[in-house]
Every structure is written in C-alpha cells, then in structure tokens.
Length: 301
Ligand SMILES: [Zn+2]
View 1 (cartoon, rainbow, N blue to C red):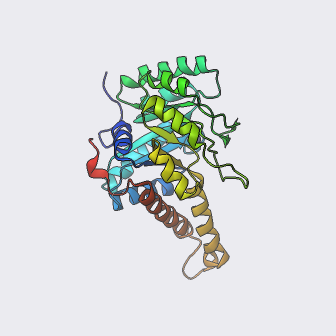
View 2: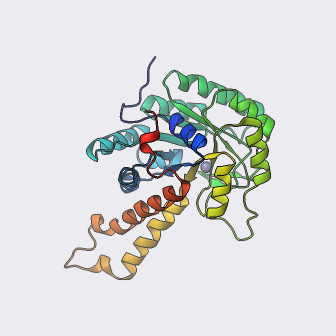
View 3: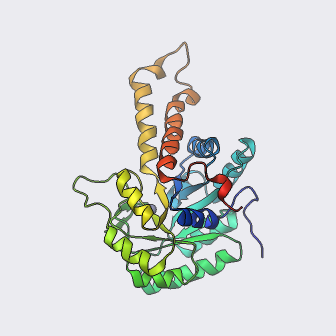
C-alpha cells in the first residue's frame, strides 16, 4: 500500500527530526476555518518555514469533517502556491478509529492520544495506530502522562510523563512523543508552577528522541527556549492564535468599523480581515523564536 495523502503534503517526521537535530522547534498551529488555514499557510510561505497545520477532532467536525479539511488545505496550497513543507496533522485523536479515518481521508500525520487510558491500553492502541499509519507513510505522535486543562471536553490533571513508559512508546516507532511536563492547554492560570524541566530532562536522557510540547500558548519565551534545549522539537499553539484573532476583531468592532455603511465594514471579508492578519503576524513572531523560521530548504521532502 502506498500513501493516500497528496504530494503537496509531507508527513511530519523529517521536519520534526531535523528540528531535534538542529535544536529548534517546528510550530504546530491548530486551524478552525478557512481564514485560519490561509493565515497559517501564508505565514509559513512568506517566511520560508516548515509548518504543521492541525485540527482537533472538534475543529474537524466543525469544518464538516476530515474530507473537507483535506480538500481545503490541499486546494489552498495549490492556489496559494505553497512550496514550503506542510504536514496536515490530527491533534489529540481520541480513538484508533478517528486516527484511521483521518489517514484514509488524506491527513499526513496523526496524534493518537491514549493518555486517558491505562498505560497498557495506551500502548496497545498506539501500536495499532503506528502499524496502520506505516502502511500509508503517515507520521504518528503518541502521548504519555497527561497535559493539564481541557481539550475537546477531556479534562487532564496534568500527570508528568514517566521515562520508562516513554521508552516503551518510542520503541513502537512513533515519530515524536508528547509528554506531560507541567504544561496546560488553554491560557496559563496565575500561580502556574512552570514547566517541569527536571522531568523533561529525565525523559530526554532516557529516549534521546523528539518531544512535543502541548499548550505552547503563553509559555514564557525563556521556558520555551530551555524546553527546546531539552529535546522539545514541536510546539503546539492554539489558544494564542485564538486570542490574537479575538483581540484584533474586538478592536475593529470597538472603533465602529463594522458599522461603516459607506466602506461596507460589515462585509465578512472585511470584518474577519484584522483577525486573520493578526494570526499571520503572531505565527511569524512565534516561528522566529521557535527557531524554525526560514528552515524550509533544510527539510528533506
Ligand atoms: Zn494538546
């Protein structure tokens, strides 16, 4: 069997492993709609940056399903002349079935998040996803420990990842691994203790393998840099883009621009533009300090 995803896409293995070797991180940006997708692709192309464009199961359903997402991303890549490496990734696939569904629909990368199961079940299901994905050249992210906060209705307490469990999952031949390291989905609450660097260091020493930081929004820059130095090679950003969009949209409305009947400020193409531009600017900013900016030509396709 051969790959199903289009030749425009790549899986995320080479880009994340290049980042691991080069001590930087690839940005994983969650999309929610057409505007988000255009902003992510546009920022990546403009800055010559490899990128992962991701959907949660919830966002995927919101957009109409996996096939709609695949069609939208591929068509935009064609019509925007996107030439930088782009992986289309399922974020937090909750079941083996949803990972398989995305692979068959044309995603080039999937996360199977079995962190809400026992380790034994997580291991078994991750193995099944890896074996299935390998037939189609799709990269796989797995998770050990849990990430704090809420994502698609699943509440994680934020248990730190265990190095021995990390080793076992890596040996299944996953492509990169998410581990609970004190990180949280959504905005970081006041009193957050910061990333658990000692645990990250223990895991990294055990596996010497690229790891993923979820909840990348709002982690202070110094902590991100330190995490990258300890093996974090993919950083997931969702909330930060939502906040950038919200802030710019609010400013547009608060100045009354949407009520300008002469300029037709109510036109959705105008109403959504400041937010879309803000997402693009935020991505350019983030990939600069993740270190992946301008690295497109260094990735083997
Ligand atoms: Zn996550």
